[in-house]
Length: 416
Image 1 (tube, helix red, strand yellow):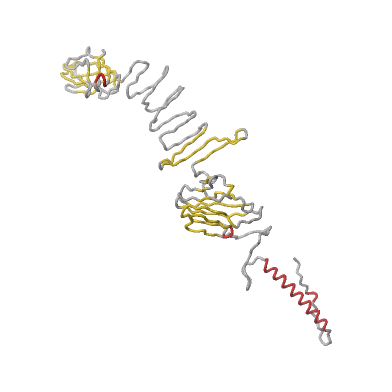
Image 2: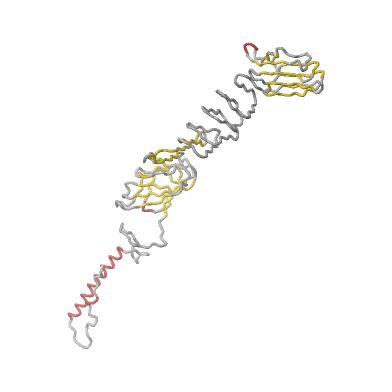
């Protein structure tokens, strides 16, 4: 505004020395001086009520309240915002007051419910925000936001329905809270959590299919008996999947150049059509329907192929007076005395034979007196016990164990 003080109306040369001067000139000067003092008073008072001050005026009250007025084209330097500590042991219901500080912090001592954000500008279209820091020492402590928080998306640990904010560990978590409609609606923004880390145990990744957001993969983590258990659901897996557990379940198809189990495959490997099975390690059971084109097959145990039988061959070097328990995985045993004739030797059938196991025994030289028996309580029918055996003497036995027939003891039945 233009100042109303007019010093030009005051005659500085009046009265004139050495002559009579009209008293009217005195009165005019005094009147003009008084009017200028009044204008100065009004203008100074107006300034005192409205200007920004670096410190209080003498006998004045310090108040730099801008009352919502606009400051334009300002260059700011060295500016600070007010810090306020809500409390070092906060729990229960509290209010967060906009006026006390732009950056506010609180340390939780228990679960806390924010009843409301108060003192935010009531002018619709004006934007106001604060930064709220929450210090957490116990993951059982939660923070419930007021119903006015209507915009909170992708906030780690935040349930948009219950408006409850949870934390997956101790730490300091910082959020921005703001409104642009005078406090009717607030938004919540996570300022600190790593975006590669998802709290709350649920991650959904979508992609656009024909213009519609479509879920491509979901990942969930739950606490099961004190152990974090993760599940991945997707239509297709391409790339690497790493798990610290002992199993992986796929409801769809698995296509891979290699299927490698470093510590063995646990459970069953079932395929409807599998032209090649390689690098499988140990198979406890293999069932083939139709023809099997197999290169090298090493089997620890009995293998029944196409209705026949094939077992390992065991060569026993027999010394006079010695004995041997035949191998559990052998189907053929050749007893080879170290000389053309030895006096005695003992042959004991396998200690842990499999049901239906065949055992064929032949001799490369002569044993004058052979001792031949089953292992433990097993019986050998048609035993060669007490006989002299040589290259023309041998036999075949099949193992069968049935409680009703053998009273719990297995029997080797001679079949040839």
